[in-house]
Image (tube, rainbow, N blue to C red):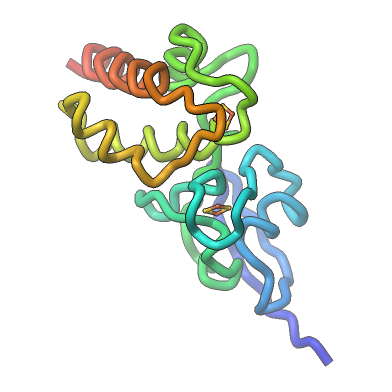
Length: 161
Ligand code: FES
Ligand code: FES
């Protein structure tokens, strides 16, 4: 017999109460239970970074967490960054700098970039390369991705100063 547990999670500002199996991965909870399929799942063991989201202000691998572990937490996924008609600054920079090809790594790159820019608004190119080093792009478009993150960090800094 599987015992479900009730959890309450705020995702992109919306409160969700669900009953979940204790073994349910957070990535599967987001994609299957909440239909937030923007979070991608690649390696499923913490290597590729495609599943990166933000929990309580820190970027994490959603394939390495269980849904029950985010009970009571604030979760941000790529869907929270903006919409196709109203993209956020980081998404705009990715578009402007052609920072995606197949797009599989993109949600994880965007969420890692959000965390990086929030914590290091003055990040140098080297900091950005280091910060993104845990996210793999099989299309190898790293140059443009780094350029986009640098551009987004400058744009966001100008906006807040
Ligand atoms: S799917 Fe989570 S790190 Fe690859
Ligand atoms: S754009 Fe294809 S994996 Fe990064």
